[in-house]
Amino acid sequence: MVTQKFNFHLHLHFAHLLEERLRIRLAPLGIHHRQARILGVLGMMGQASQVALAREFGLTAASMSTMTSRLLAAGLIEKDVDAQEQRSNVLKLTQHGKSLLKQIHQEWEKINRECTEVIGEENAAQFTDLSMQLRNAFGGSTPGKKCLDENRQHQPSNRKNAQI
Image 1 (cartoon, rainbow, N blue to C red):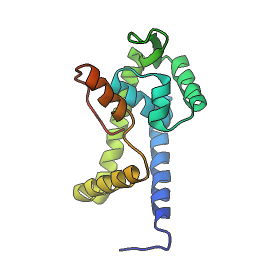
Image 2 (image 1 turned 90 degrees about the vertical axis):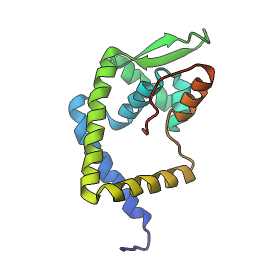
Image 3 (image 1 turned 90 degrees about the horizontal axis):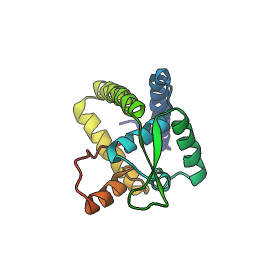
Image 4 (image 1 turned 120 degrees about the vertical axis):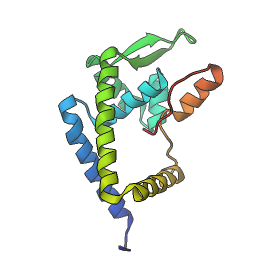
């Protein structure tokens, strides 16, 4: 086993390479990988407030506002009045956003397959489990999961819960 003085540098380097590969794959779709993650969570949840999304992704309100403004301008999401809280707005995917999300999922699947092909299914599964443990230990969580769980308590739903 290769051991370096600062092993986490390998994690950073791999994350950078993976992010760059994803950027290249999503460029023809006209979307950035962070925007794609927002669309993914909205696809999973159905709808969410801008504040809830900012909280889920650990972003400032200003950063989320900029991102949602771009997604609104691109016609990928729309704002509606929250049926349960008339003073609030919720964001949801447009038909165009749903269509693009299908393409995003295809690109995400290709990246997953590439990683699995390189290190094998067993190692890929173990790497995913270890990455999740590290993410959780450092205070991260699956974006949208908490909101989705809260929504399920209030109303039945058949939405899928996916790792985004």
